[in-house]
Image 1 (cartoon, rainbow, N blue to C red):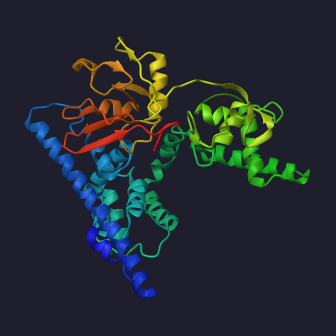
Image 2 (cartoon, rainbow, N blue to C red):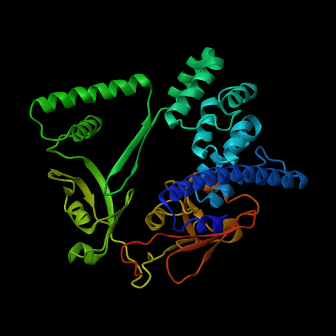
Length: 413
């Protein structure tokens, strides 16, 4: 398949190039369908082997999602979601699966159909599936919003009596999250009830109109963002936001005006000039605003490899200073493709197997990945590469992956 796609990269007319794009899109859908089938067969194989071995577990397919994630080069949470999605397609949405494997729809469309019908009984999901895609071309030309609206119309015909209950349950899952974006920015995302969301939008819009009519020169988007932060944190522009930050940089960057980027814990890589302004106590995005409580933590790296200087502990528990070292070294969960924040500090080689509590044998993990690696057949070991901290991971299926800590300021090469 890879060779066939590579062969598409040849000369031709504009019409032929257009046809190649369309063909490649069909192949993407068919490939997603093949992954659906392979994921469910992997799960069935694991369950059969555990059953044959007499292993009794509450979840006999535990850990399969993590293996699927590694193969798909995505986070374990996404892998588990894909495994569940695959099972539901095969069980309840056969016409959607056929359209996917034929390349008539993409994975995103199939996921929308699954998500919008997930609260319905299997039989009703099947009826909606047939109404949508008994003809595999049934969704041709529809945008994402139109597909979702069509599915919802069919779903609400079955689910109208339970819709209010479901909406109330959805409200209980409200959340707000803040995570890194590019260019030293953070992105805010979340889910709120429709009434709260509309109230926020109306309040911000009213304040934007008031300030603009008073001559505020900021754009409407800038005012909306600033007002939201002001009201959440209670700050004023004169005082600035109270914030404790930890910036890791080389002495060359800090004292000699070097250009090597720094590392901001909780965000990632930042420009050297930005970091020096931050350490100096100013908001790098607004020179008029003070930034309070800036700390300077000295961390030393190997001059050749850039690896943080390690430390050991005789305790099974990682002491705070060692946790800080590992957190800054690893930055995110060390499972490949998992971008979850570090919640646990894990022994690469388990303490019960003689693994020491040390920087070298420690790894930052999210809670889920920390539990996944404890299942039978999952093995990990530290690999001495002479450079940054590297772990060799072997899954129960025998696949191997390496996880190397990201480079910190001072790393050569």
